[in-house]
Amino acid sequence: MPELPEVETIYLGLKEVLVEKTIRSVWSDWEKSFPYDKNFIKENVLGQKINLVKRRGKSLIIELSKNYLVIHLKMTGQLIYRSNGYNFGGGHPNDSLIGKMPDKTTHAIFTFNDNSKLFFNDQRKFGWIKIFTPDSIKEFKFLNQLGLEPLEPNFTFLNFKKSLLKHSKARIKAVLLDQTVIAGIGNIYADESLWMSRIHPATLVSNIDSQHLKMLHSSILKILRLSINKGGSSDRNYVNSSGQKGSYLEFSNVYKRTGLKCKRCGTAIIKIRVASRGTHICPNCQKLINKKQH
Image (cartoon, rainbow, N blue to C red; front, side, top):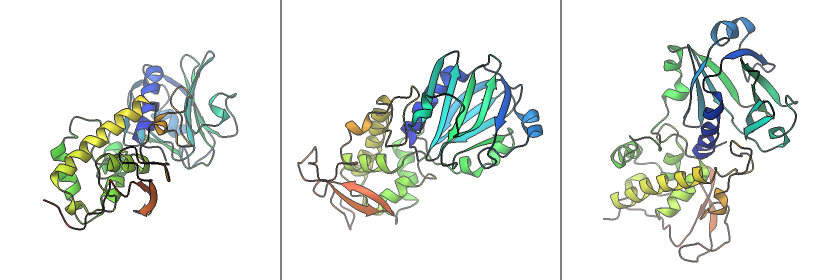
């Protein structure tokens, strides 16, 4: 599943080409991806202009003149924009990004007033597009339960600490992966941030002192910004909005570096299991703290 930097990268590209376009027609063939009949689409989508494209956690939100489209790409989703020979795409890095559209993985097509098109592809059919009115989107728990946005101004250290301490008896990696605490962080960036802040992923939140929490807060921001700058990780399944693989993993410190030397101390990186996820650490830099240090 994509993490914040991958979705942010796609969002940054989509907003450049979709805003101000009017949706002329919609085609779909997979009810689980886009569960609406023609009449509902006609009443709630057709003829509406795209006012804004934004990201919330790992989801993309397209604000229409009256309603909203919310998109989640899951594991193998793609969004591909085509206009007079211009090819633009993000998502699962297969040949569909540059091939003829539609293809066998295409499950929804949005055609705009200028004949440009946005294709929603999904090889494994786990992704989805949902339609919301201004009232119904307020009741959408999937979005409403999301936690702090790391790229927003309210992601201050005090708010970050307050959110973590609500889960003081949980292991820090599990808390970082909890989307109701912080939106958008997944396995890669949890590992990277914890390494940078010298915290063992299995440490209980209550055993982490304020100094290390400040380091973690700062590390999350640094890692996410670097990854966005590099176009995301593209870890097998994701490429950026221009169809190019992200390059963050070339700069990673622990993720997928099992057996290689820690860039900080030279100790071999190991892979363990924390929060039911494969977890990469430096056993020397990231000591497990069983009791809060002062």
